[in-house]
Structure formats: C-alpha cells, structure tokens
Image (tube, rainbow, N blue to C red; front, side, top):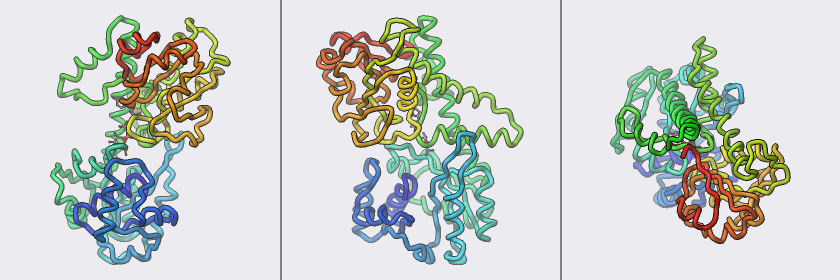
Length: 416
Ligand code: UGA
C-alpha cells in the first residue's frame, strides 16, 4: 500500500471492483482502515473514504484474504542501488507469500517496476500466469493518471490472463497495448529514461544559451512546436530527481550493460544530471560572491523548495538535496522552506523552517529549487529587506523578473 498500491486499490475500487489492500505494515493498515491516507495525493483521501464506506475497498495485513482473489496486483517497492542493481528482496518475499495462498485460477499482475525477465520468472516460481502491467503515474497526479492513462500496457504470454487484466480497465478509455512480458517491462524503463534524457538535453542547452546569448525559453518553444519532439519535459531545472527517474535510469543502464549494449546516450544524460547539480552551485557561487572562485564558507543561504518537484512532499533523490549537499560541502550554512515539507523532517544538511521569511533572514542569498507556484506571489519586497544581500538564483525560471527585480533582488536564472 505504497504510492502505487494504494492509488491502484482506491482507483480500481472506484471503477467498480472489490479490492482488498494488503500490507505487512499493521500501523499503515490501521490508519488506512480509518480512512487516513498517509501520502499527499490529490483526490486519494476522497476515493478511499467513499469506497471504504460502500464496502468496495478494505485493508488488511491478513494474507489469507488473498485466497479468494481473482487477480493479485504486486505493488511492492523495488529499490535500485547506485550501480543499477535492483533490490528484489521485498518483491521476492511477496511472491513467496503468495505461493501457498492463491486460488488455482488467480492471475498475478506485476505493477512494480521490475528488471526485464521478472514477470516470466514469477510465473515460473508460482506455476501460474503472471502478467506485466506497469504503472505510469506521476506523483502529485497519481489518481488522475490512473483513471485517465495515456496507455495501458499488458505484457503476457497467455491471452486469457491478458484478457482478465484488460477487463480491469474496461471502464477506462485509453489505448491498450498488448505485448510480451519483456517488452512491457522494458517499455516502463524506456519511458522514464527518455523523460530523463529530455530534461538533461534541455539543461545542457540552457548552459549553451548562457554562453551564446540565447534564451532557453525561446529555444525550447521552437522545439515544442514540432509535434515530433512534443511540448513536455523541456523546462530546465536543477536536474531531474524523485523516486523513479534516477532509479530507473540506473537500472536500465545496468541492464543494457549486462546485455552487452552500449547505451552511451543514457550514460551521458545521467552524467549531465550530476553536472547540473554542480552547475547550480557554480551559479550560486558567482551570484552570491561576485566571483566564480568566491568562497561560500560560512555564508548563510536560504533554499526555497526541497521536494523533487512541485505538488508533492516527496524529497527522495530530490535535486534540491543534491544541490544542498554540494553547497554544504563548500561550507555554506543552509536553511530551507518547502510548502510540502514539514519542518520536523530531518533534511540534513538543511535546517527546515516553516516560513519563507525565516529562510530569507540574514541570508547571503536565496536559491529557488522547486517550482511551487506560490513562490511567485511571496512578498518579495519583504524578503529583500530581510536578506543581507538580496540575490536569488531561480533554478526553475519560475519568478516574474519585474516583480523580483523591483523588490530589489539581483535575479539569476538558467539559460536566459
Ligand atoms: C515519473 C514519470 O513521469 C511517470 O510517468 C512515471 O510513472 C513515474 O515516474 C514512475 O515511474 O512511477 P515522477 O517521478 O512523479 O513521474 O516525476 P516527473 O513528473 O517525471 O518529474 C521527474 C523530475 O524531472 C522532477 O525532478 C522534475 O522537476 C524534473 N523535470 C520534469 C524537469 O526538471 N523539467 C521538466 O521539464 C520536467
């Protein structure tokens, strides 16, 4: 019952199925059974409360409940080490617990992002049909994306099992793509890695724009108008992060290497992402000290935004934290504010506060790292007064230039 499992459970119940959400975490199950949703996802509270009330949804730690299931969706986490190796311990443990419980015609559906070959291996272990059916949910839009998907991908070797998975989504209007399990598994990695590649591409272009006196907004717009390129994922930032893109790119690069395929273009996108964190630090150094070699030692810097993107409280592999770590290594003292992140969260080296004015107070400069829309309408004049040297590096090109400069800030952006 993590992001994927809980969203799938609530949305499938919403579509008219009877769903039991199973988790080994008794506290979480108790919370969910009272209608309390432990993650910040729009509409999820409402869906859970409504479906609990009409009996279509229930939560339990009792695995024997699975005995009556027609389908079981595996949504356990599959973390990936720095070298790209997937840690399948939780996944394998879940598979093992299923082996004695399931009824003979139950289809096992794999929603977790798993290395290519895992679906077939699972079918073999359990001696029954297993189907790959990856999720493509964006954090912060998970329930919406589940109910309005771009595509539903079903990777199966048996038509009957694939039909039963497809029937789960009968009420949803979206293209259904049927594939073999390996293509379905690989398609998930390929999609996330391609998104990462796009963002790295635009981040490097932003640096080039600065050197050549071009504007990344116009360059990206010129690209966007070509439908073959597409309009999304062309905004520069402090690097891509989150719980999916970094881990899926690492895993795909390793998979390619193991298969003897040189995926240099992906390795390049990953290197560009690490370089992007350093580039932000270089920009901050120059903006705050006035010199590319200036020392940040002992300087107080205020960070606006800690989450890996706006609309979520998630700080896993957040570029904001990668940048903060480098700034701290350079000796800066960091205070951070994020509308989604509680000040009790341990985010060392950042001291988290619950008010943007506390971030600005006596700071040598500000760094905006997450594109929360509410940052646009902060009281910039007040923040300028509080800041020791009103300088801001806006890594998301979010703010209105006139508002910030009129308030007295020296305003630095990416690629403009
Ligand atoms: C991503 C994919 O977008 C989903 O399709 C996928 O289902 C999900 O991973 C997953 O595998 O479960 P998510 O992790 O929520 O979703 O994050 P994204 O919205 O993709 O953003 C990833 C990172 O790229 C963020 O740090 C974001 O700020 C950055 N980004 C995105 C940019 O810097 N510029 C852009 O133009 C777009």
